[in-house]
Length: 133
Image (cartoon, rainbow, N blue to C red; front, side, top):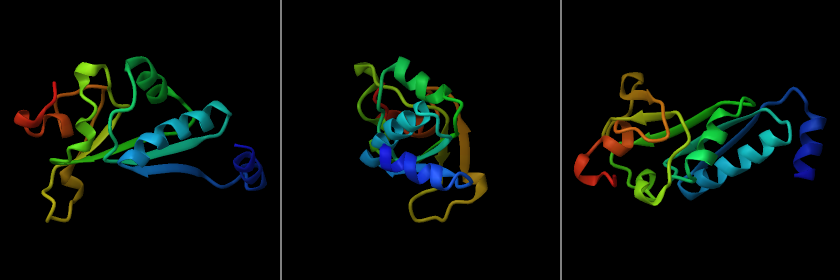
C-alpha cells in the first residue's frame, strides 16, 4: 500500500480503478475496499467474479461511498454462481447483467442493472435449472 499511496499522492488528479476477472474479480473487491478504507476514491470493475463474502461484508463494500461498483456478469457464466448462496456467500451490488449469447456482440439493450446481494434475475436467475439457491 505504501507504493500505491506514494504514486497516488504524486498524481492527485488521476482516477484509481481496480479491476479483475473471475478470481481476480474476487480479489479486486478486497483490494478496492482496502484502498477506500485508506481514504482513496476507487472505482471497482469486476467481470464474472464469484461471490466473495457474507451479507455483512458484501453490504460494507457495496455501501462504501469512495467510488462506484460495477459488477459485470454474462448469461450462463457459472463462476458468478459460486460459492453457493446456501453456504452464506452473496455478491456486492449492483450487477450489470449482459443477456446476449456468447456469439453476439452486446448492445446497450442487452445490459440490465440489478441491485441487491441476492437477486433472482441476472446471472443467478438466467436459467433456473442452473441456479444454486
